[in-house]
Image (cartoon, rainbow, N blue to C red; front, side, top):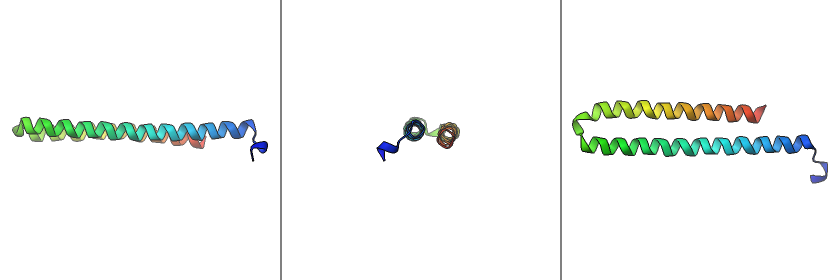
Length: 83
């Protein structure tokens, strides 16, 4: 198998490796970001329970923005993999 490898095969395997690493980093970043958002929102609600509706709305909006960026990163990685 190694004797049959061509430069195109090596380039394709590097592209697949890069796409996999990119997808993994995007998922890890999203998980950490949403975890921080949720944790900080819980702390803020514990400090000011009367502002829980505003905090919850801001938390949901911010989490949606993080998810959107993650989805875009995954789409770009898949396009990179398939190209």
